[in-house]
Length: 147
View (cartoon, rainbow, N blue to C red):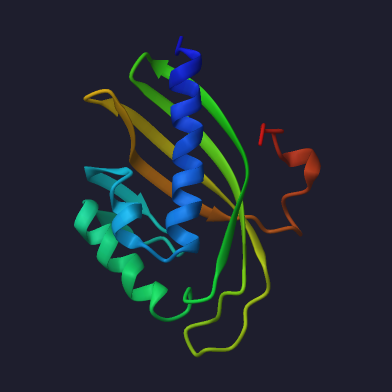
């Protein structure tokens, strides 16, 4: 239901998110989300709007995510309409700290994104982030996704 070019553009959102994260450039991260984004972060907070998402992440990148490295490990894309898709993005992170500055163990997580093609560009319109608990979620509970 979407073109090869659209699929490539959507996958590029994952690369752009990773680049913004790893360069700690939250203006760049804000550029790939819609102005009205709904963003549920991994701790369950619900952020509304591009500027709120940018400010929230900028504060964390000045602290516990200052040295973090994010990896995108795969993405599935399911079109709902020619201009709206649901994506599941498997990702991992290392080199982050707890709020008190102590090191955290590397983690694996998954985003659910609703992406929307607006004015010819794909942007993230909604995001929900969940850590994967390896004691509960084994490989038999994961749908394989392409890198």
